[in-house]
Image (cartoon, rainbow over all chains, first blue to last red; front, side):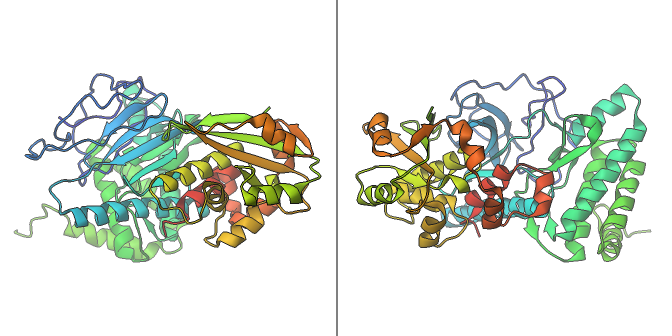
Length: 287
Length: 175
């Protein structure tokens, strides 16, 4: 079963998605028992990583870093994500999972590139004033990265779930969508393509009413000025949105509207988005 | 007074910071550090925003030493180099190391398992007054730091100055 993030940690938990394998956001996320790993104990699940489960080669999970208060947050296919104290600060450690089925030279290069892209995009975001975690340490040997932990945050995904469940405050969601559109417009104006936009990769800092958003997980990001790439970035988010959160079409529309209003280069991007939508999967051309 | 922190990723190593004001013998201290009679990194506190900045530099330096990939020749030099946003070693020393006319000095000592350093011994060599690390913010030249690290005004809204600084330090060699 897919290793869910620490959903068991009451409500205020943050689901940090490690690099997932494609747009798998439609899955139901089972609530697993708390993955609290105190001290330097390794992850409870050994053997193949929690993905499709058909891996024939047993993947050695990377040894967890010896950080005080260490907790395994998520065991993704690409990386194990931990939370702990690093040099006195709340930090997130992303340790890449080596893929033994890959040729070692390729593996090394790919791993290095992904990590470099993540670090580069994070720095680029920060320089432009786009809220993203600060980078504390990059380890080129194990291809791990230590980042700022946005403490007490929740994912936009969890926030939408709880709002929809409690049944009120739909106007708040509208505002949230506008904020998201604004943030993405600014990011795309810096030519930063996130590569894995989902509601689980957007965090809300407390207090929630302030709608203080932070973008995370730039492992699949890259720099591009092409409207096509930006359009696809938005398309991925749209798909993730609608499949994970029912009845949110109007919300996404509000997001796009603000995006178009905020970004100076939005015209061609929206056009491309429409094109990509027509192109999308399972679009039968047979009458 | 001084502050010590253990490096989580390198458990045998700990970092101690000592801060001195009204220092009269900066020139002599600098010479001693270069000769190696003081086994520590002597840093200009005006360029330091928060002890965390030093810890990040020390962590990186120790990491590079362990894998044999230091850019400089000694661990202490590497700490100073890690603080700098540039890849020019002498520039790093000029900006982050102490100069003969400085009156405030931050001494960083990295100790590992077998090596013990006598703090009182080090402190006695400084002709100045040792003060608590809490005094550091008063010694920081914020404008100079912002200029040195090229911190943009937009960054103020998303984090503290030390966040911006540390980000640049850690991603310096990624590009």
